Image 1 (cartoon, rainbow, N blue to C red):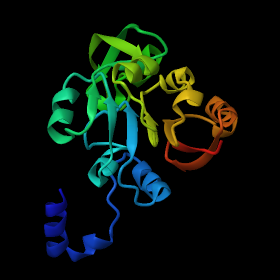
Image 2: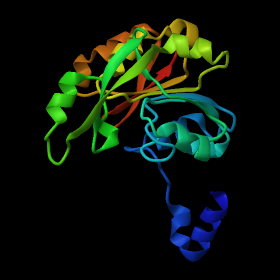
Image 3: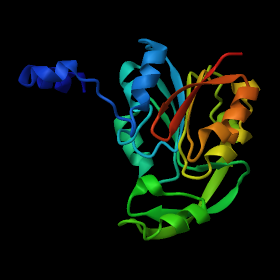
Image 4: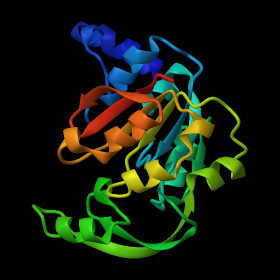
Length: 220
């Protein structure tokens, strides 16, 4: 990747002055500023979606970070193994309990969800439609961490799981895992957001916003 960047800079010198983001709304640029050149971080990416596309963590993988990427999308495992071999990929959904749930898959994979209400709202909206519905194993955050024997400090926790974000956030023991920075997708009025009040009680402050993604940093 770095080799191709050098070629690009030679052919198009103006690109030396751009900031490359892989995230959907520039979240990785904000996080990179926060960690200020850190080269050996560890992330957990829940709803990883794709190794590069709309990725909140690939920029950090390029910098030398590694972590655990979790997504139920069937083809993800092959892509992560090929393009991000340092990462551990877990092909599961995440919820507040271990069970099997209906997974609503759209013609735009970024919209895939376990939330039936959200799936019904999006089905037929613009050109989006449900292509298929699968029964998928879901697990808890804690069970996955124990299964993968995670005992490292979590620098970045990214949660983007289309409708289950708050459910999963509430199920994570923040006093035990203490991620330094959290990215979570929030729709609606942030001032009245249950996310904000919950994370504030857990020792986090609102740090930044990009589009529908809100970033919180641990202060306690």
